[in-house]
Image (tube, helix red, strand yellow):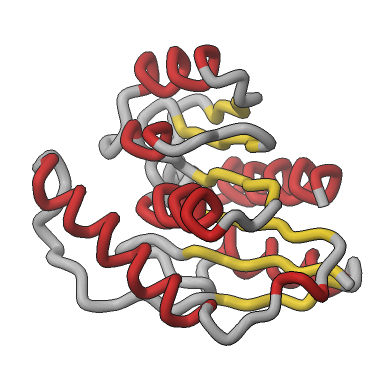
Length: 180
């Protein structure tokens, strides 16, 4: 049996394109899929390290609560897919729980790399206002995390051009397919 857990972002829930298609793909490949639900965040966290830290702790607490009933030992393969603040929560949860999961990091934040980041792959937009591109590049190199970049894309990996955005979702989904 295989399991895929989706760790959403502050405003990016599991029904938005990157997580929606990741879940759909995982199900098609025989994974059980658990889309976590996050709520109760302060919407003024951007740019404030203290608020970001509290938001990350809150996301980890929500994930821990929702996953407390899961028997991970029944799964031979576990994949965590995190988006934004969810990338921090998925790596922290993996570290604190000892789950042997690979992780897909959709638009990670710099704080994501405060946890062990082995067996991870990252996706980043070069116009992401939540994460400095050069800092993400350096952190990925330092931690040996393969990085997929999308030129001119924001924190949702969108550029504003519909066809470019659809192509990006396709590219991300194809890369996730290979990782699953």
